[in-house]
Length: 488
Image (cartoon, rainbow, N blue to C red; front, top):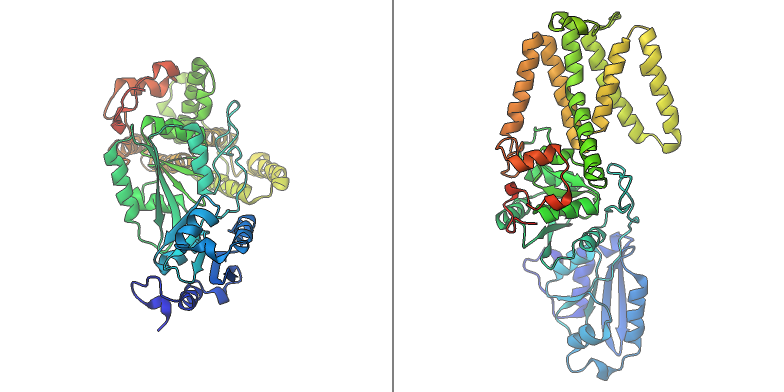
């Protein structure tokens, strides 16, 4: 029977058996990047296990040089204590009793040192992950403000957060999820502000995740903890900006940082959280209020303008005399509803193509799209001029939505309203809008009403949604978070 199949396998008595166990457990002979190095200093045999590419070579080399200068008396009487406290000059050094745990830790990056005569594994966390430098996120750009953003390395992200939140009550709690992936997770919150029940509830949901791995990182976790899998609306807000994350921590939100992802999860998030943008708070309050109003107009247009235009074009009796010009003069060879559906699919195809197009060819793609969807498609009769115009307005409103996930959900609602208007006319449009509003008001995000502060109604937060209040006047934290300290 293989050594690693033994149950409750703790540290074995001899170095030879320990080395053989870890060799088989880590499959050293089968993976070129798994390194096992036999060492001998002052007559004591040792073995070092590490992953090439994760270990800091200069640190390990420095430790080996120190070992080479030792004498047998230096390791007496307690070899383990002498090594850890004196002769391994590194900050992150720990000891592990179980070989299986040591093997799992090695797969995460630390180096494992087994020493003859010592009944524990010495773990040296001298690891470094391949990482890019913090850059401004593409989806959350601002004219004024910081230019750093989260990256794919969890330690970098926690450091970027602590740089902005130097509070003694800031907690970074570590978890590992995934039976095989062992993905590092960090739950981040301010203990003096965040609701304990909310934190514990999130921990329980995370600990219940039972899967091989988290290949899509934060999106995989969201599908496990948010529930309602067919709900298109996001119940978690994502951000790649440390300043945005810090602002939510001060309100009492709980964040989840996942190793391998530059997006930090903010829980809980209502519908209106997804319409906020850092640019509104980087300008004067009046300017910020104007920018927020313009953004709301764009989002409303992205949802309602196409269904309304179709409804009025097909039912001109709904329009007063002064608005009778609305509607296409020449519908073309393709029915109006089919024109909208083709255009919607075409916009999504262009979006996908833009994502996969190298930046050097992006201009060429834009020219081809403008020619194909614009003038040529109108001339051949596929689209009318009005369809192209209103579709462009809806697309601009979609891209003006701060949350990418919310913009995709609103796009599905737009198609739903378009189809309901086509099937039942004015009644279908009213019914569709009513069902959409009822759906949003009945939704909950981590036991919080998704449409708060509209339902249930709260005056001050309701006012703050439409008016970007000056920061000195925002002296209360959101009540729906039940913060321990309600005053800012």
